[in-house]
Length: 486
Image (cartoon, rainbow, N blue to C red; front, side, top):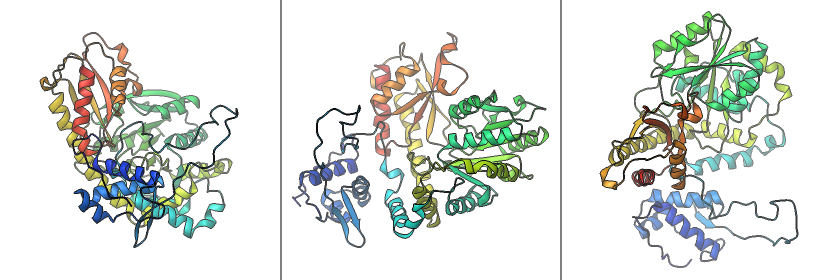
């Protein structure tokens, strides 16, 4: 290996581990680090560059995930062969097939990302264990209800962490909440329930599925303590879709008294509560309130919905629901007509990930990291836009609600003025240019921003902060405010 000539720039917007990763990637691609050559140990690399071992490990982990190196137990990291493969003819073909479909090594994701948010090394160990120890299981299709090993782990985990009382046979696994909602629509029709109440603002894909399935939809506004229960339908068997522990996108939390009130409404009206426990694990201050499912003494009023997309990584589309016994029996009657939509290999890897305790450890680490990011965001908005942006829902989740005051002034230190005539969509596009994810609230609410009166001098945006590296947050928010007010 050639001598390391990298000079890290601590003032760069690129984190130190990204700078090291890019340098090593180029060395491997250009032959400076030969195939099979051992990279310096993490400790040696850290000492040579004056960085932490964690920073070096993050760079090596990214190289490992992308296939530039391999990790040999008790030995270290070794460079792998990187080649373009045989050349293709330039003849005509179907549209797009003349171009490489591989992810370019230099292609950046759409938004900023933070590899510190998840331990891919431990995940890779579990994936490898499935291929090494259970290859025979991969020769058969997955159970339409989900792999038993994963359902057993979920059953144990949700009971200990959220008080959800269930058996593995009550759990259904699918690729995302939308797929589960399709199953729920069929079950509810079987129960002669044709009306669904939804939170406003709320998760629109669920609304669209119920609407397309012919359900009558009622929008119920969300207050500071959750959905307005007094506006729910009475004397009509219905289903209500709620996020009581961390309402998306407002962050509202339903207190225990209101939870019992909602359960009473369901019993008295022969109705079903669809409890989406969205991001309940990511509450950073105070103890989460118990899940509705665990408070339901009848055991027949609540469907509990959970997902691993926020607590693992977004690309893994594994979600699950816990059904009351009578609804589970209905699902059993038609599940044979469906294929499992989740990767069987990923289901088994997740079962191992949970069994080995990696999932619990990762949740604790994520809570600490995201809590620090949340506080950094609040401080940055107060510093750079004290009279322009008011952060809301500041206790949990992966996003902030931003109340933007259209007549407000940004921080004088930036030398910037008002937003002028910029609309919410304009601000979102400007943020995207900085690789920051910001969405207009109007996309999630019955109330369109265009319907506001002239006297209403504010609008609402959803700002996702969870994947921004902690040391980039202040600069990122400063640059965003500058672009908004330029």
